[in-house]
Length: 214
Ligand code: FE
Image 1: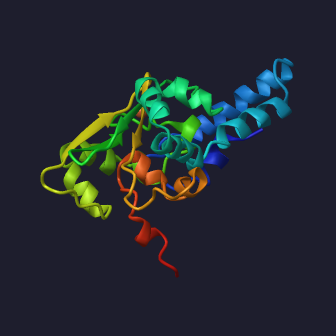
Image 2: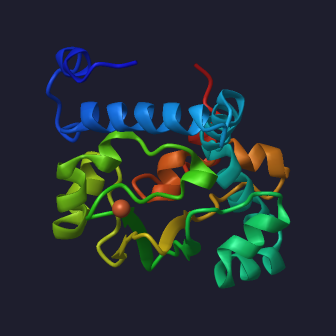
């Protein structure tokens, strides 16, 4: 049994974590009640949590690499992200998946201004900065400045489109395939695609940059 006071004492005050002790306590209490009523076992809860923690950016990179290689798959991915993800064995549980394609003229950036909506069942947990108040506010107000701080300077002719995620809609950026990657197989292409490139705060580097030793 967790005492509220002991949880609160062990939690330093951090931005975005207000009230976490309360929710930790309520979660623990609910878990104990459900187990006491034999509605769920501890093993089932652990398996559910493991399922939540399994997704990782490589899953998203798999979709991106396949889209780069297979034009028909790319069309299906842009039309219906969830159905295309299912083709590769990934189940998008939380919402619709909208895949937005970067081009020389349009750069896409993803945010959730309200909270922390993110394609978790594809990319896993969001990075800390994604849920920070600063990113959520500034990504819509001054996206170019934010991108510059991430080290991404776009040409002046490239427009920035910011997509605000919500309970019904999760976004994934399909980055541009770098030049000189025509000889790479799917797995090698996957290795080029970072989590941040699928959020839109990074581009996929040229092959010479990625392959540079050291
Ligand atoms: Fe949200």
